[in-house]
Amino acid sequence: MNRRSEARSQAEGLRAQLVELTASGTDRRSIPAAGQSAGLIREILPAGEIVRRIVDEARGLLAAQVARTLS
Image (cartoon, rainbow, N blue to C red; front, top):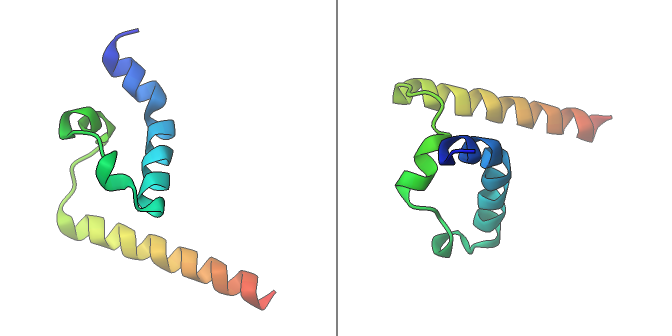
C-alpha cells in the first residue's frame, strides 16, 4: 500500500484522534504538519460556502438538541 492510500484508509481514525486531542487541550503538541494533513482535503470552497455549511450544521445540531430536550 502506498502512503497516499494508507493515509486515506486511516483518515477517519486520525481525524477522531485530532478531535480528541483538541478537546483535551493537548492538540498543540500533536497537530500534524501541513503536508501530513493535506491529504484530508476533499474540496476547495469559497469562505462564504464554508461558513454557510458550518451555520447549517450548527442549526441542525441545535434543533436536534432542542427536540431531545423537549421530548
